[in-house]
Length: 275
Image (cartoon, rainbow, N blue to C red):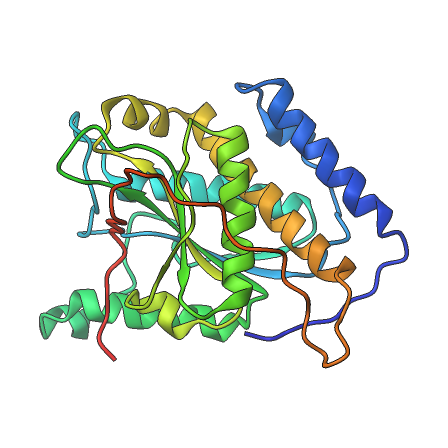
């Protein structure tokens, strides 16, 4: 992933924009933030962002008790997130825009559809040389008790960790209650192969009836997408305002918040891959 350096003359606008976006979310949980998205935010202008709607086509992902498929929710949220990012001046690519996967006919003929899908998603993302990558998924476990959105990043990837922590905090502040902390993993196919701020967002549990009801609601999908957009804006604003240490390494802000005492292990529906 390419590291880009940009200088903007009015950096204070970034702080005001972030505060404004946060006010929108706090002041009205069910507001439609698309009308309030700020065009041309300095922290996002020209940034290349790839948004991955998890699953697709024959791969439906998790399914709620009433039959709603993960692939449909992730695609809806991906489109909403792309809209907000473009409103703010980012260059956005989606790995898929309709209900399909990225496997080829040859992959299917060789019964390697799943591997081909992941491989081609990786190629697509790398080909765009993104400044950030966000893969959107829904969680699911056998018990209906577990709930809460959670961010996942590749273990050892500090840029991804920073973005994951920023996005997790926005989830805590603006979405359904969650005390979850970002989780670092080392086996997810895409995150292993995409450098820089590459994260996976588990936006809620389809196995939890209450949370599933929210996830299929377009207004709540807007809240999820706008929270993610705000976090991405904050991340890049912080990167541009962050002092550089003498050795050239950027300073990092503290450790992640403690995990819940009783938290379900991450059950990401994003596939694990082999080296």
